[in-house]
Length: 222
Image 1 (cartoon, rainbow, N blue to C red):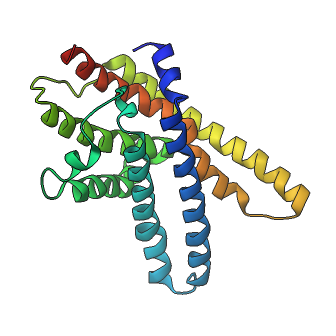
Image 2 (cartoon, rainbow, N blue to C red):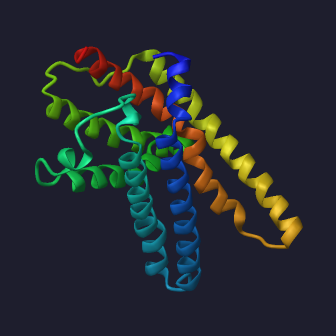
């Protein structure tokens, strides 16, 4: 995989469209769940459920939507078996995708190292879900021998990019939110913008992994 491959796919209309829809969905989600959380903040258990169950679960659904819209460009492919063929070839695949990402959203912040690197949570979720999709894709294409290890260089790059791009999303959302506050005297936009922008900035880290996987398929079918 080259830098040109990454940029070409990153700025391709299907991927940009998937990112735009994802960003809008996430910002709407953050807005409505923030209002819901405010409405039930005095009800301890309900507020906890909203913050730790409902919101992470909805974020997983939004991430799944992004992956479905970005497929198959996500793997650097121009054509591939239709997504419904992958998801419904066997019972339980959709629930496996959702449950895997949801469990990761709960467990990763508790990990000794990752708990302090929250910027890794979203890339790890996306990578786990992409790996499942890639596995089902190899089965559909009858490709027997593939590796899910992208190489040490790819892993190190992801570990470096993820927290850096999280910080970038934070600063950009804070800067835009500050301008909105000064111009319109409206507060609360920072968190909405942050969640919407996060995948925009972190998608290169995810693509580095998915393109490394997809390259095996491109070579296998040549």
